Length: 130
Image (cartoon, rainbow, N blue to C red; front, top):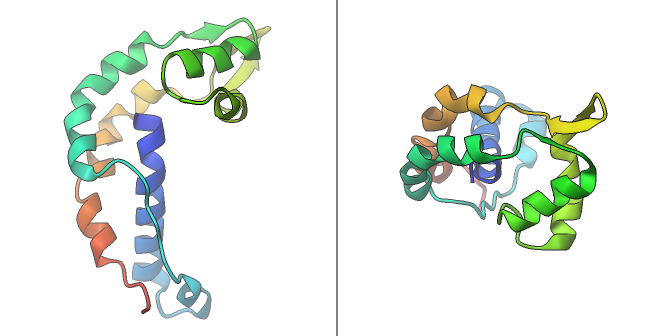
């Protein structure tokens, strides 16, 4: 959930940042809308205590990309095998003939709460033209 839910937060916070720092610039006025189909702040915050355990249970390495895809699908991270074939391989890198995660999610733990805290209000405060 951490990996997937952060996308919505990135989009919301990016638009907020653009509007706050560059709102008067012509290019910034081209933002006409933002749809976020994601976890809401409340459920994301409730799930955070379980995230460390979920991340720690992930395999540390894979013998091949098929293993990465199979893990994504069988773990429920990706619910469709075709989607897993597209979305899982970019999350790993080859090191000494094995595939390991590109991102150390546990290292990002200090940022999990700030990532989602206040997200709903930031989204609602965006200035989208009518």
